[in-house]
Image (tube, rainbow, N blue to C red):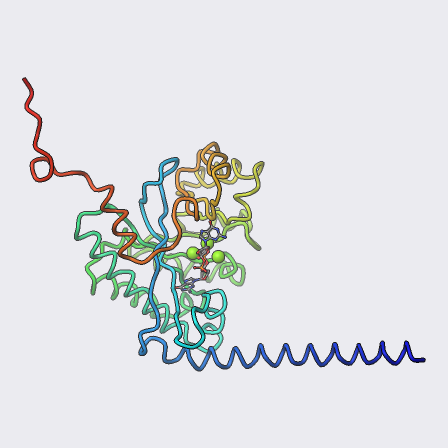
Length: 289
Ligand code: C2E
Ligand code: MG
Ligand code: MG
Ligand code: MG
């Protein structure tokens, strides 16, 4: 009897614990939602850039722009946490537009300095469904004088899963502007090979989880190439992974090993360290006797 009672009590406690946890989660969401509304105006957002490198070197050919939020009290909040909140409370349009403009601004500066580089931004599935999205992209390109082929828009496969035909229509429209489309996180969820065949995309980003699959990687990379796509292996953290990826014939990679996401000025420093040295200005030309 006593044992039963204590078990019941424990059960009850567990329910209470659960409710407390749920309550806390709800409160956190409400706080995030509320704080996120003012984040742009309070200047709490910034972008980091993670290099996409030519393999097997670590020479950056492009960069993915990743959104960062530093709140004075909440500290730094991860995009995995606040992006879904923004999507649910209708804030994502504003955020993604801000990101698009910031990214184009940076890109335009780098191109102006003569760097051969592209920048990608992540696009929320909700964005693509908006009729005026294409106009928004064109406007950003115009405002910052960025050639469209220097901008890449990353869409995830779960965006595609809902309505493939609609997605194809949307992507065609965006692609007509000349920007390139990357399918992000391929292999992480519900991707089907049919999508690779049907979607008007230019780049295939193979998800970290698939990059670890030593027997599948060569097949997926080859498939991507067969479809005329550039293939990027994501989430390369260790040398042995890099070696394996290179063996598959994959030409582009991204991950902590080649470079973590960093501030624009740090990425720029990396670009500068690769810039060709102009003869005469820096090094006296050697006389040939
Ligand atoms: P994603 O687009 O797949 O971005 C790659 C994520 O993987 C980034 O996390 C990056 O820091 C992380 N990563 C890169 N290399 C490695 C590695 O070697 N190992 C591991 N473990 N992780 C690596 P982050 O920045 O936290 O972004 C998470 C997700 O949030 C992104 O996934 C993207 O879906 C979303 N996100 C980020 N910025 C934006 C944005 O501006 N707009 C939208 N709509 N979504 C964004
Ligand atoms: Mg991405
Ligand atoms: Mg990704
Ligand atoms: Mg991801």
